[in-house]
Image 1 (tube, rainbow, N blue to C red):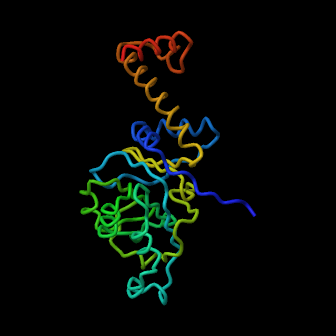
Image 2: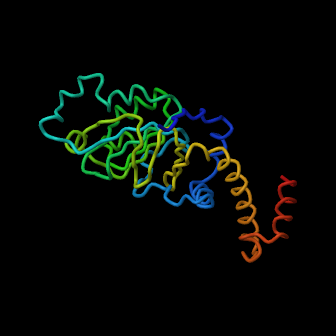
Image 3: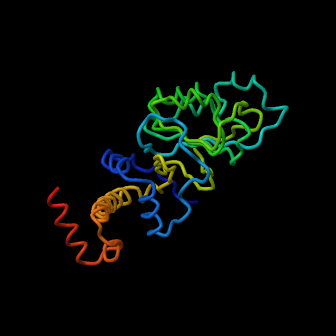
Length: 242
């Protein structure tokens, strides 16, 4: 049997660095490590407030609903996976809801999203729909979805598992993976790579700031992007100047 270990909590340093670099930079860092399927497809930012979303994944998995099981009374059960997930997500984590890319019903609504925000979650992402979307849109909290959808989750989704491996936007997500979301979208970082991706991604981001400055001055990208040794030396001098 494989040994299952609980990953160390995400450090404040890594969390802060990831909040300062783009999902584009992170996907480049992951591609350099052989990981190409890391950016969630069809998932866009819904809320207008809140900064970059950074946190460990806490997952909720849905399967298709069935009419004789998925009735409104199920929400009275405090062990209902959707309700329990909302009340047990740890602070600083991102709720990742696997809706199988079915946008015909909501994976959650504004009350549940607000509850997670108040409890200290770092954000919410689903590859399905969200209801009460105008209310969610105004929250000062990172929220991502594939669509706006008024019907309740019970019409299409049956909640079955909490904090198990899921798929979201065609990307595998394991509990504890690090989720980063900006205005471009959402990327998934395997937990064991998060610290080095954060450090090296931040350095890449600084170099790209340097490149952008030089391109605006009229420089050619040749020898600059990707860098020749002379450009790297110039970059080091640029950093020293602050």
